Length: 248
Figure 1 (cartoon, rainbow, N blue to C red):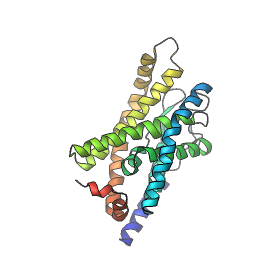
Figure 2 (figure 1 turned 60 degrees about the vertical axis):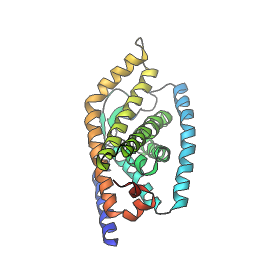
Figure 3 (figure 1 turned 135 degrees about the horizontal axis):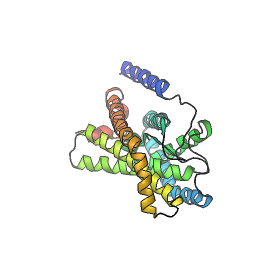
Figure 4 (figure 1 turned 120 degrees about the vertical axis):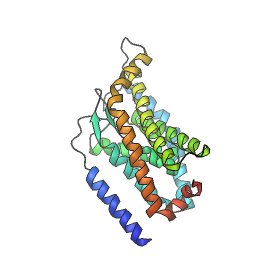
């Protein structure tokens, strides 16, 4: 088992070194200054209950079993790495994978709100990817709304006896797409001009779709590969958090 853990560590390190180095950012989640101050404050306030619940969820997970810590850290690193790979999209935003489905499947959606917040802060400060004023809006779309959908889909698939890999794929990919539905709505509320909010949101979604749909499929595949690797090389940790108890 020690040999398998070393192999998994080497594979994880190679993945981070290969994909984790980001070029200079020329686009953002929702960039600094893209939303009016009142919107920034409002989205931040909306996030607070989820973050409070997330801190409690993480505390309970770590108190129950310290073996959850490496998996929690890995879930956060996964979010940071693949959400840093971005494709410019509409003005003030971009298309990219989110990576939050993995954490939602393993630890639940509220824990991911905290992981996502940490990732977004580091990306805003170190990579100019996103912004500090738009931190609340970005946290809600990527670290709250998306993970909630991912978790819900995964649980529904479990009740329906759907194959585990198919459930993971659907949870990760649909959660990714829902993140961008929320982002489009956030932009539409702030910048709908003479159009109605639904019409403006539809326009944003049409612009996002050509890049985001294939990225969502890729994220689903990557999440399945990571889960498969964890089931192979980190079985004790996966049992410790209760994931493998649901084997099907």
